[in-house]
Image (cartoon, rainbow, N blue to C red; front, side, top):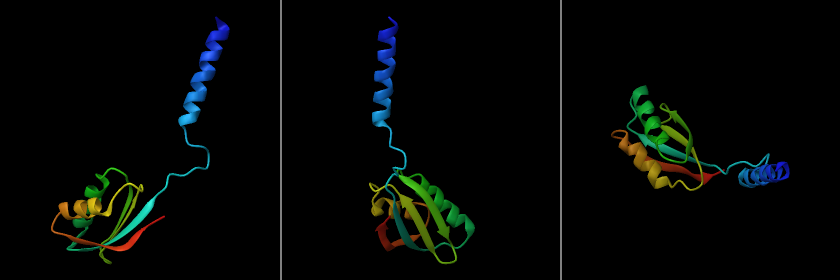
Length: 103
């Protein structure tokens, strides 16, 4: 019985390790920079940030109100159209991609 239990633990461990990322392996990320018109106050930036963070796959959002720029770090499967839609849904903002996606 002890041998069966040990074999079961070994199989379970191998199954769990097979699905885990290896050490040093990073998830691929892409950075998108948007020019955003219509941000007039810090609340605008917070609304845009909140809306973008609601998009699945968004990892980080940086809003620079003075430069009228928003930088979004995402997983590769997130399209820019969904990011523009999220920005525009936060208020009366116009967003345009400034820098193409990249790592």
